[in-house]
Image 1 (spheres, one colour):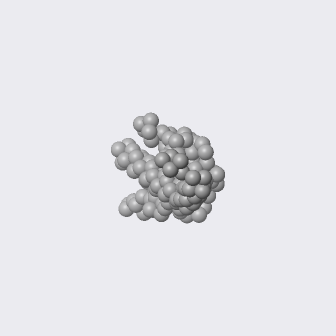
Image 2 (spheres, helix red, strand yellow):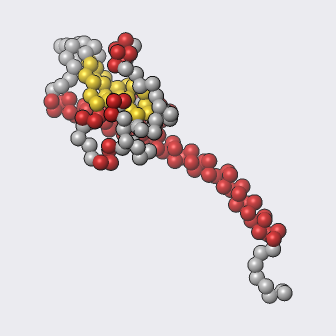
Image 3 (cartoon, helix red, strand yellow):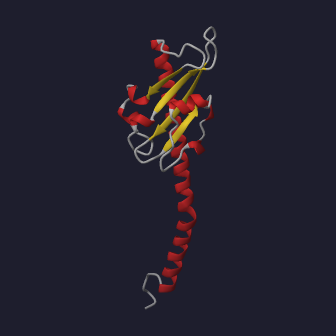
Length: 158
């Protein structure tokens, strides 16, 4: 019996307990890192869409003219490759809840433009209408957003 190789029942139980402790401690952290990374990529996607709309408006000279004029541009109007037609979470965008708003915050003589974006995918990952300069990872919400209506946008003077 001295030449038998293997683990005793006590050693096996001890090994299983150690593995379970490691899993309990590290799996939530790893999932948190993954979620945080996806939120960062979601924000990067939002900034990409704003840049695409900015480029489009520059090429077409479609900027708002008068002070406080706005142009609302659905991201579904952008010619995007297949990868950009879905969120980082792998879901399709909800067309009516995904748009960029360009606003002339300057004057007619000296225009200055601000851009805000709202995004939501089919699973409810979203960003409520927010100025592009204020986008943060913490702005990515789950379970759907109350995407601001353009009238609210104007009323709040954003």
